[in-house]
Amino acid sequence: MKEKFLVYKLSETVKNTSKIQSQLFEKFNVKRGLRNADHTGVLVGLTKIGDVLGYKHLDDGTLEPIPGKLLYRGIDIENLVHNAQEEQRTGFEETIYLLLSGRLPDAEELSDFSRLLGESMALEKQTKIAIMELEGHDIMNILARTVLEMYTYDSQADDTSRDNLMRQSIDLIAKFPAIIAYAYNMLSHSAKGKSLHIRHPHEHFSIAENFLYMMKGSDGYTELDVRVLDLAMIIHAEHGGGNNSTFTVRVTSSTGTDTYSSIAAGIGSLKGPLHGGANLQVGKMLKHLAEQIKNWTDVNEIDNYLQRILNKEVFDKKGLIYGIGHAVYTVSDPRAVLLKEMAHELAKEKGREKEYNFLNLLEERAINAVVNRKNARTKKLVCANVDFYSGFVYDMIGLPREVYTPLFAMSRIVGWCAHRIEELNFDDRRIIRPAYKNIGELMPFIPLKDR
Ligand SMILES: CC(=O)SCCNC(=O)CCNC(=O)[C@H](O)C(C)(C)COP(=O)(O)OP(=O)(O)OC[C@H]1O[C@@H](n2cnc3c(N)ncnc32)[C@H](O)[C@@H]1OP(=O)(O)O
Ligand SMILES: O=C([O-])CC(=O)C(=O)O
Image (cartoon, rainbow, N blue to C red; front, side, top):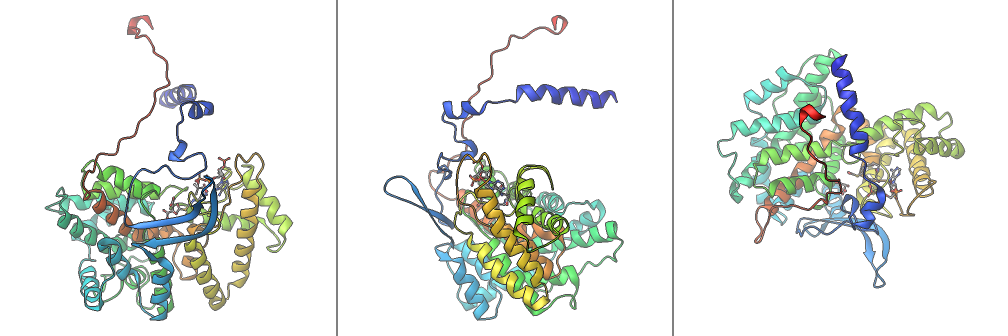
């Protein structure tokens, strides 16, 4: 009781000591959230990896919203996705090669590289045992913990030479699927009483197929499920240097810390509900909306409920509609467009068109609700982001909610590694260290006996 009161007292004090008036940000020209007044990001670095385009700068200094584009090393992700679809092959391995090296592999290079990934997928015995012994209820945390542990088994863990960073990157990318699948299987065993399956990855399967196989066994997925997961992985792999988790990896890498520490920090960032964790929140929000909204085609009923979410009256009372809005994209997020196409095809095939239509209408009404919300400080255009349709797609290929955000990490590990290698390999690199202005008042020190 006394401890509880002490915590309460400390926390109450912070109510005042952490208050910073909004006007002060303007007064001292602080870029809140590292964002300029027109909502664009403050330029903090240069990269040759990903390019995220959501607006054009016009000559008069204003911004013109444009349909979103995402380029990996100068190549439009739509081309990577559509080419893999047309040739009916998986494309995630080719995407990894492209992002890590800066160019597309030829057929022989791709085959050798895929073999190397396949051979690197199995986990060390100790890593497997730790996943099973320590258990845990959040797979993102288990993933971060496991990555930190991998430091122990790497005899060159602290070596930041380029060759070693590349070796560590390939190893981490290859091992994420097994860590996530084993952690989920352990979770469903201990929390849901399911039989425990620890399946050894197949060296000749693609990463997407191996993940489905380790999660569900050989009769638990179809060829189409593999294709869909592979495409989802391609589009989640990279998003420039400014997204929170990649920036976290770049910030930590700039200190010269080891790969495992830096990647674990990125995982912690991605878990947040405003970033990669939004796909889990979208899943929860949609379930809530599907239960609360009686008529899934009634625009008024949907609008009223969304308004109540924005008013912080219902759902998680944070006032946010998850899966909507983006720091860069305005008219559209190209990944959401691709996922929506995929969701529609799958919904037709799996007899879930009613849910798809509900989601489609929700997307339209949610955009309208956010743009026209009361007390809006800006009229910035918003669109559905990558997290809006991903959960529905994963659900249709039989993947549980617990792995939605880990799946994001399983793919984004590629971008993180590419950015870490870049951060540690350009001339004139420097530790990232911005400034915070102290606006507190001077306080005299009073000896303990006089307080
Ligand atoms: C993989 C990813 O990380 S994609 C993003 C996943 N996150 C989500 O889906 C969570 C919901 N969305 C959001 O919270 C925001 O849109 C973010 C975090 C993605 C982007 O945040 P910002 O760049 O600060 O947003 P932006 O500058 O476009 O916001 C404009 C205004 O719209 C509001 N807004 C934006 N999105 C939403 C939303 N989904 N629900 C309610 N209000 C919103 C903002 O609060 C802001 O209001 P203000 O001007 O009164 O401060
Ligand atoms: O760019 C961002 O801010 C968030 C995002 O969409 C991503 O990381 O994929």
